[in-house]
Amino acid sequence: MKPETETEAKPGARGRGRPSYDLEDQEAAENFRALCAGFVLDRTAPAPLWVQLKNQIGAAIREGNLPPESRLPSEQALCSLLDVSRPVVRAAIRALSDEGSVVKLPRKGMFVSPERRQTDFLNANISVFGDMAAKGISVSTDTLEFFRAPANARERQVFNLPEAGTVIRLRRMYRMEGHPITLSWISLPGHRVPDMEKLDMTNRSLYETLRTVFGIEVRRAERWFTAEMPSPEAVKLMKVDAHQPIIVIESIAYDQAGEPVEFYTAYYDSNHARIHISV
Image: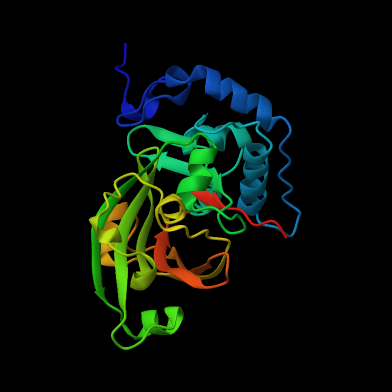
């Protein structure tokens, strides 16, 4: 009997370094096969096959047919299931990965991304801390700096401070269920918060502290958004990709009398909590 060679391997046999998807996750493979029955890839359509495939997998994710954290077949299995080439599958998966719908884990496989939380802090009268906590989400803070200092030119402008004016500066990392979500540089007008630097702000809501200790109610805020490359500090502390832009927020919050009481700049990681705006 002629020994089996690499090119004559039995159908379905496990190739070196390529664990069989069906063997490792039969249920997921069957679910995807059922889903594929509704996929239509039109080779005569103007849209490339990879775009059609990407759109149909994306729709299946949005509609819940592929739930968060469910496993996808390997690229090789997708080629077989859909009767398309590897470049088509690879381009579709890359696009889904780039938009955050799919994650590829080395030596584990491809998965639908975990469901992202949502923060309404853009149009709510509460902070990120309060918004998340109100939804029953575990929120914690790391206080990296907390001190009183002479106001710089921008702070004097925002708070209408004299040359000798001071501010309280608070640099904080907010975590949502353990994941870094926001790295913030916060300034408060010093004359409005006497001796605040003596407080313990560990895992304490800033807005709640302003209300209960200093009688300041934050009623509204103006916020501006840009996409910028993260600083080395943000990359290190937030564990974000140094080569991918991140959301940068500048905010000025106002009290019940319309006076500015908080100014901050923050890096915001929308991979863990997307931003919601009602218009």
